[in-house]
Length: 252
Image (tube, rainbow, N blue to C red; front, side, top):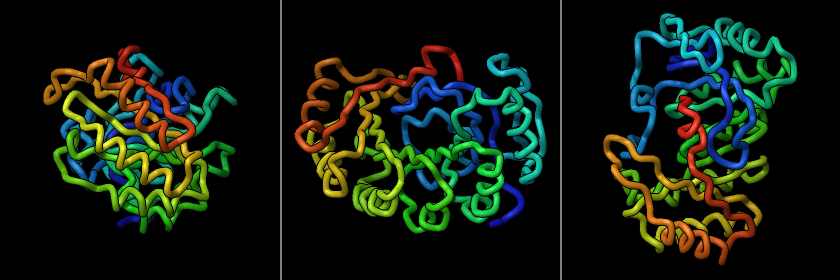
């Protein structure tokens, strides 16, 4: 992996639409490639290498310009500067994907340059690559970690990997997000909540009803969502049901 170049899908400025930082303005850098292929993924285009990446010129206008991959660190820092020219508008830079940790060598050299700009680093991750996280853990401010339910992903049970990741990340500010749908089972929520609690009962858990996609036609039932919250609250102090707000805004 390169320390000076990365394969990127897009760069833009918008509000965070998931988890406990909903509504905060962020600069998003979406990395290409993922080690999973979840049925509900809403950024399928980012799962494989692309020849080009795009950058939105005016936030919310979808006036994207196209650039060649891979992107250089200097290119991405220039885009960060462009969006950050208004001063204290942005809460942080979101490193999202795909799965950013697949390009950890680049992140090791790139993240310190973001921090030099007095911006927080917010890592969005599928929570399966604990060893790679350890290489950049000291550089990250906030970790938004997924726990993938077998009923939703179609990729099997990853709970052991998730717990290992959570243990590695526990010294940082972290919250866990679980996407659930109509096919999700109470026992999956029970097992995931127990695994989180074994690390810390205080780690916030966000239960996120799946948004319909081409592959997912229906979201969960309201009583199902409330049941899952009650199950998780048996083990954890902070459990919230939060949908994808950016879908309501018609944003990326």
